[in-house]
Amino acid sequence: MPLVNSFYFRLYLFWLGFVGLRSLLLSLVFSSLFSLAIYISKGANALNKESLMALKEVFYFSFPISFSLSLILMFLLVFKEVFFHNIGRYRLYLYDCKDECIEKPLLSDVTMLWRKWLFVTLWIILIILVIFLGLYKLFTGGFPIEWINGWSLTFLIFIFGGLVFSFGLSRCKKVRIKDA
Image 1 (cartoon, one colour):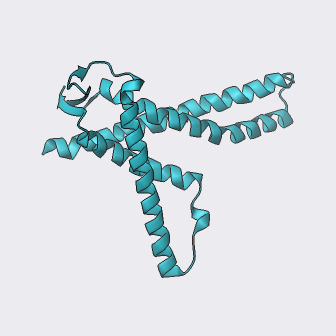
Image 2 (tube, helix red, strand yellow):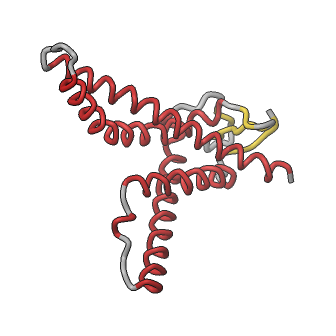
Image 3 (cartoon, one colour):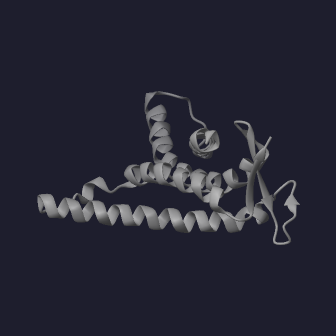
């Protein structure tokens, strides 16, 4: 019983922390580098108020793009990274088709898990959105299309993606949970 109470919650927190923090940091680095590259390509003029405002606009423009790309990258890397960390007193192990433990899983080993996670997560989010829009239309008579944007979809991915990650790994036949 303690495994159910704490392990899956800790696994969700691991996923949320890994994906959220690393995506944010990587996107900040990418946006800063992109802004710096634009600044250098334009001649690296003196930094006055106008050029700082322009660099700020370039940073704000490039941040959502770099965040989206880094988020996709972290979604894949978290599947590899989870097999190298102890979560509580437990550890996840990946097995191959011959039922042999893979000591150091590569990205090619976890790609199938990632594809299943991505498929299930997308379907759950779509089902939740359809139910929400249907109930909203039923009770109010309108559609809240302005509520469906990049921020709300990212929020749904962080909620349901982590839940699918936590419970999906526990039900996968190639993944086993053992004492660390």
